[in-house]
Image 1 (cartoon, rainbow, N blue to C red):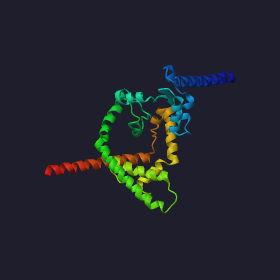
Image 2 (cartoon, rainbow, N blue to C red):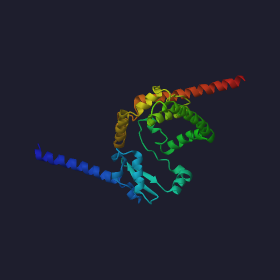
Image 3 (tube, rainbow, N blue to C red):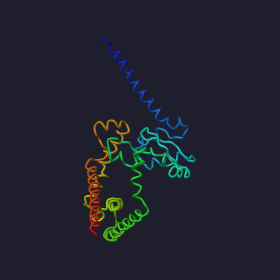
Image 4 (cartoon, rainbow, N blue to C red):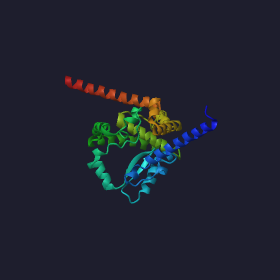
Length: 275
């Protein structure tokens, strides 16, 4: 049997070793850009240490740190990211060398298909495949049709403002434009008239309110932090960033939209065969 002092020494040694390991890994992570002779901002500007500030404010601070420099590196949860500032370099990356810059995912969540298969989060060949499928949606003709639909939503917004400005001196602009966004996205992306501006208690408005509620935000923030620390924990417990009710709503919405489009296409083909 070892004396108590020996156990204390062993315990202190383990704690010190663990802390030294953490410091070593932390230092190694935040040396990524420095080791490659790329200007960088260090640990103090990491997004996960500045969660109380808006993401755009964090980006602006980092942008200002690279004054007079065409590009620089920063970190998000220890993951290295590259910020490009030079317009000519941006043009070359976005046009000529675009195929070489596929691994630009903002979030890697293997257990959450909605987040994992989001075009902004995809990398490599999977990103190229999804992008090639989505690109035909944004042809000039389809964008013109979307503009017409957006203008119709704008007219509804104008009429609503004309009715309400005479009744009240104050208008909740954030909520109003939230409803406008719901109507616009609904009609352009899904062909659905959400009627969010006129009906404040519509199902779509309730989902948006839940999506922007503090509890939903806090849950998502905790999941993001957990994903940054250990994605394996999320996968092991089958945890997802998005609220299950909201996820089911979007799955149902997309499924019903696809089904309706297929039925309409089938009717058109049937009409052609009898004509």
